[in-house]
Image 1: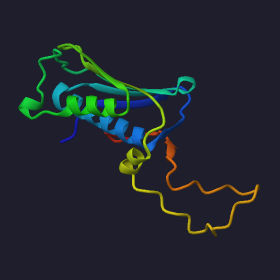
Image 2: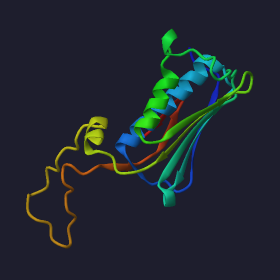
Image 3: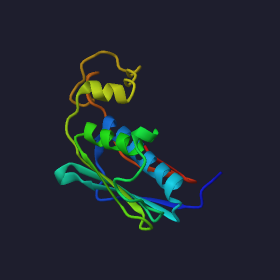
Length: 173
C-alpha cells in the first residue's frame, strides 16, 4: 500500500559534479532514510535537501521527517535484524564523511550526511558503476587542438547530482 506522506526534494547551492561512488552511496542513504521514516515514523512530510558548497567541495544531505521519532540509543539494531542506521553510517564513513541522526519521540527525525569530495580510488569508482563503453566513433587518431581528447579508461568519471521525485519515489540521478 502507498503512504500518505508528502515527500519534497530540493537542492541548495550551486551543484557540481560528484564521483559516481559518492552519488551512488548518497542515493542509498536517502533511500534508507526515507524508507525508515515511512516504515517506522508515519510522517505527514519528509523533506530531502542536498546542499552543495563548491568552494569547499562539500555536499550535505539532509532527510527530515515529522513522524513519530525515537529515543536515540533505544532503536532496533543489528541484534534484532535491523541494519539500516548502521548501513547508512558505514556508507558515510566509506565516503570519508559523517552521518548524524537527531530524533526524539513525537518530534520527528533528521538524518544528515556531510561529505567532503576528494579523489577516490579508481577501483571504488569501478565498483560503483560498470566501465563506460568506448566511443565507437573514436578513430584512434591523436586529437588535434580543435577536438576533445577521449579520457583514459582509468579516469574517475564524474556526473552532476540531480534529484528526481516521481510519485513517492526519490532518486538521485
